Length: 343
Image (tube, rainbow, N blue to C red):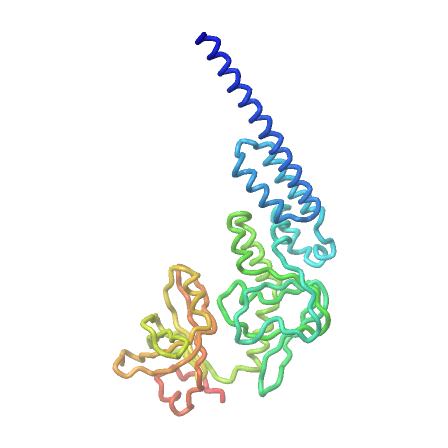
C-alpha cells in the first residue's frame, strides 16, 4: 500500500511541476510579446522597465531576455529622427549604435517661442542644448543694455561650459526666432555610467572641439572686463555664509592665484567633484593674508561664480566680490604691479 501511494504522490508532484513550468513559459512569452509591442509603439521606458522585471523574476529565461533587449534596440534605431541625425552627423558618426540610442533617447525635445530666455548670466545651468533649427542670440548685460556676442543656429551647442564645468552662466541666451531644440539634463547624463560608461566623455570631447562658448566668453571679456588681474604672495580663507548672510563654521583655504578690484581666485584641494560643485553660487567671506600677516587680513565678501578642476583633486575657486574695491585700497595691496591698472 505504501509503495503505490508514494508513486501516486510523486506522480502528482511531477505533474504539478510540469504545469508550473509550462505556466511560467507561457507567462514569460506573454511578457516578451508585451515588451515587443511597447517597443514598436515607441514606449521604450515602459519596455525597458518590463524587461528589467523579466530579468529579476526569471533570470534563467536568457533567450527571452536577450531577444527582448535586441528588439528594443532595433526599434530605437528604426525610430531615430533623420533630420536631427543629419544636423548632428559629426557627433553621432563617432558613436556605436548603442551609444547613439542612449544619447538620442536621453534628450528631451522642445519647441521654444521667440524672445524666450534659455540661460541667464550669473545663474546656474544644468542642461546641454542641441539646436535643431532656429536662431539663438548670446549676449551679456552692460550699462543696462544687452550686448550681443554671437548668434547660434542649427547644429550649434549651448551651455557646454556650465554643463561640463562648475560655473555660473557667463552669458545669457535667448531665442530670436522659433527654435526647435533638444536638451540633455546632467542627471540623465550621470545615469550613463552604468549603461554606456564611455559616452559621457565622447560627448564632452565633441563639445570641446565644436562648442563656441570659449569664443563667446572671450568676446565678452574683451568688451566687458574692467579691472586687471594681479598675482600676489598670499593665502585666502573663505567661510561659507548661510542664507541670512551669517558666517558658518565651514571654511576652506588655499594659495591666492590672482586678485582684481572685482574678484579673486585661489587654489583648494577637494576629493569629490560633488563637493566642489556644491560650492557654486555660495556666498562667502574671504580673508586674504598677504605675506604672513594673519593678524590683519584683507577682508571681502562675494559669491563663488566658478570652480575650475585640475589634476589630482586640485581646484581653483573663483569669487566675484559683492563690491568693487576702491582704487586707493587696492593699490595699497602688495601685488605684482608690473602691469598697469586698467580703469
